[in-house]
Image (cartoon, rainbow, N blue to C red; front, side, top):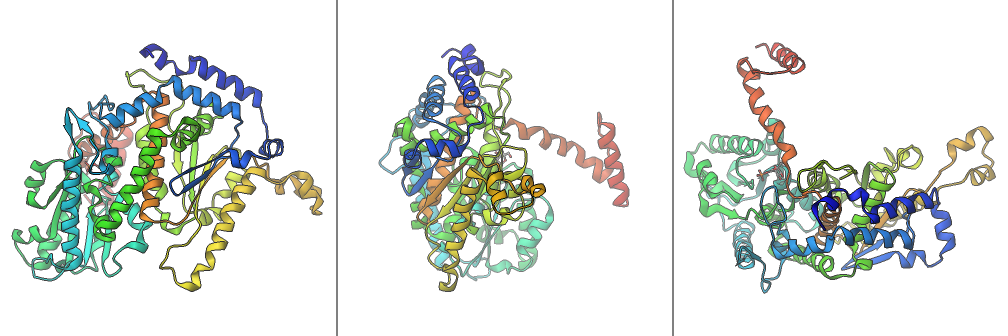
Amino acid sequence: MNAESRTRLDRTPEWNALAKHRDELGEVHLRELFADDPSRADKYTVSVGDLHLDYSKHLVTDETLRLLRELAASADVAGLRDAMFRGERINTTEDRAVLHTALRAPESAVVEVDGENVVPAVHAVLRKMQIFTDRVRSGEWKGHTGKRIKNVVNIGIGGSDLGPAMAFEALRAYTARDMTFRFVSNVDGADLHEAVHDLDAAETLFVVASKTFTTIETITNATSARNWLLTELRADESAVAKHFVALSTNAEKVADFGIDTANMFEFWDWVGGRYSYDSAIGLSLMIAIGGDRFREMLAGFHLVDEHFRCAPPEENAPLLLGLLGVWYGNFHGAQSHAVLPYSHYLSKFAAYLQQLDMESNGKSVDRDGRPVSWETGPVVWGTPGTNGQHAYYQLIHQGTKLIPADLIGFARPVEDLQPGLVAQHDLLMANLFAQGQALAFGKTPEEVAAEGVPAELVPHKTFKGNHPTTTILASELTPSVLGQLIALYEHKVFVQGAIWNIDSFDQWGVELGKVLAKRVEPALTEGADVPGLDASTAGLVARYRELRGR
Ligand code: F6P
């Protein structure tokens, strides 16, 4: 496809066919779609690994799905996917390959970047991580005073925090319960303070995670952590080697910071920050769950990578999810997408997906730098479902906005749950199933009236329904299943970026704020004159200084 036809996605025959089809479908209701086709639930269910995906509660017909697949074909999603797996430089604005899939490839695989197979290096780092993990967990690795390490504090932000922090929460049941794990990201000193104030420095290991090792929040927190450690231990710089390790692509900056590069776990520029937690960035997680569990998680990722690479379009789960998002975002005007896990352990799942999806697809120019004239990535949000039910579900059920949602649940609770609490699992899952049903089918005015509700209250108690959901049901939240879930979303995001013809792997939109913060800081601290400061910001800075007594 040439650049011009790619740019005008919304003028392709495939796009126009979808727009026409959308008009023809009108306000068709899920009640009708289910009544018309008794096989709908079976037909619109796919399985990948341990994940069972029911997408029957979507506003689609066979024709919708066919037209969406044609759109994917015309955008050559499969071609771009294959180029990604082959190690081509599909991140064009940074001139980089995009190879997070190589991080979970088996040792026998061959994935080449510029003619070099990267898989042996990936496995060498994994082995180094495992050796270190074993030494920490067994107590063989001692702190400066000879005490064993009991606390691990990960310092990183964005992709160097969200992945390990989310996965630690998700896999808590598999973690070393006799150790303490904390994740510090915010440059607000309160974050580090709360993470370390009750820890014994002699038993604490700091894992400084930063791909670039230049990120101001991380370097500031790591410097403060080093000061805290040396003060607490009344030690000199020699103590740092036993209490700090680095995860980075930048050995020079790691050495500049004062961390011995022997204590550095490397990864590569072809791993994007938000795709990095199964690289060395996962070290804190590996220490928490152990090397074997970490490898099980990688195998889960790989399983879905292979599915995405090989499954036919009709059964390709990430492709389907990506296309459904395009259907709502581009043809129904949906602005957001809710992720609603029915698992307390997935409390950070939506926050993780926010970076994955919104940093990837929050773009408004195409791969050639031309403005797009179609909607791109949605606002992604959510919290564990049962809590959401008593907060914002009201708006999803009866508000004016269309909010497609993913309901995620597990058949079995985690294994180490107290027996008395296991019984609650059925109630939890009953809520998931009930919400999917209520959102899809609602409650008609006739049904409300038949319950004897006074006429004036009938509109208030009516549920329109027709709110689309995907239900993702898995056996249990294991490391492998977590890997499968994350890979599913990674590839969904890929599919959408490919269709919208945007570079899903750069993040230039975060740069301006970083530059301006550096420029404004001296104005706060020293009252320095910042040339070109707008009147509003100058006024706020002046008020801030006044409140700080400066
Ligand atoms: O927010 C921008 C960003 O570059 C993310 O993409 C990245 O995950 C995060 O900052 C942290 O970067 P680093 O790992 O280099 O410290």
